[in-house]
Amino acid sequence: MGFEFLDRVRRTSAAAGIVIALIVWLLIGPGAAGAFALGCVWSLVNLHLLRIIARLVATDPENHKLRIAAVLFFKVPVLYGAAYLAVHVAGLPVVGFLAGFAWPLAVIALKAAGRLVLGLDENERADAGGVDRGS
Image (spheres, rainbow, N blue to C red):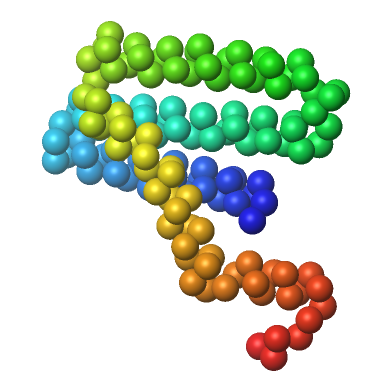
C-alpha cells in the first residue's frame, strides 16, 4: 500500500460521507449533518496534510525543511483552531463532528482489512517479483 491507497481512501470517504450526511440530515437534522460533514472534511484535510508531510520526509527531508514547517504551521493552529471554532463557537454537535472525523479512519481500516482478506498485497508482491502463484 502506497500513497495511492490514501487517494482511494479520500475518494471513497468523500463519496460515502456525502451519502451519510444526507441520511443524517433526513433522520436527525441539519445540525448533526453539518457537524458530520465538517468533521469528515476536517479529517480528510488532516490526512492530506499528513500525506504531504510523509512524502516530503520520504523524499529528502533536508531539502524540504521549510515546506514541512509550513505544512505543520498550517496544520496545527489553523486546522485545530477551525475544529475548536466549529464545536465551541458555532455550537455544532460534538458527537456529529467526531463521527465525521472518524469516518475516513473507518474507511482506512475497512479498506486495509479488505485488502488483507482478499490477499491483494500478496498478489502485487508476487506480480512484481515475477513469481507465478498458479492463479
